[in-house]
Amino acid sequence: MKPFWIDLATHDLAGAVAFYREVFGWELIDGEIAELDGRPVAAFMDTVDESGEALAPTAWGVSLEVADLEKTAAKVEAAGGSVEFGPVDDSLHCLDATGAYVVFTAPGDFAGTAAEVRSELLARDYVGAQDFYSRVLGSGTAGVRDARGLPIEAGSTWRVCFVVPSVDEAVERVRAAGGTVVSVDPDRAEVADPQGAAFVLLT
Image (cartoon, rainbow, N blue to C red; front, top):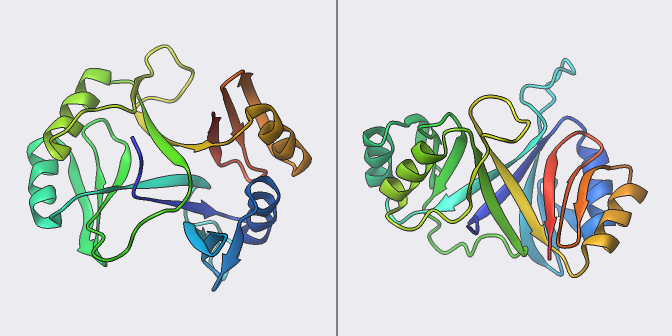
């Protein structure tokens, strides 16, 4: 499924900015919004506090578009999830029924990310994840993957997938910029930035 918005929490903001500039050509504007050709693609959040401690894991997160946050909050709880906080600033922060952190957004006039991006949920409880998102979003559950055979921790996790013209060329840029390549197939590669945030490259 296509996320409405994506954000990167990182413990090394300068390093992340340099990496994604080299891999995708993004530029950071106003200290937190990455743009490509003048259009917003993602938010970058520095997780390090004044003492130098990282307050959150380095990872990509997704926001899914909904029409009404109050109704969505009720659906989340009815479907077995929980509301962590919100609605606030047009967003609702939740845990789904399988334990994955997800944000729901009622965007107003904002058009969302301009990036060619998809998102997938790696779900150990595949049936539970399908049920939760069909009940909350009222639509299909494309993007929910059965992760029972994958080497991930218990529970579920969202993965951001960037669409690129050539996976091989993008993989070389990831390596040149100091990232890690986990696996490569002709139309898909699983990689991570130098700070450890995992993402996928797709054609």
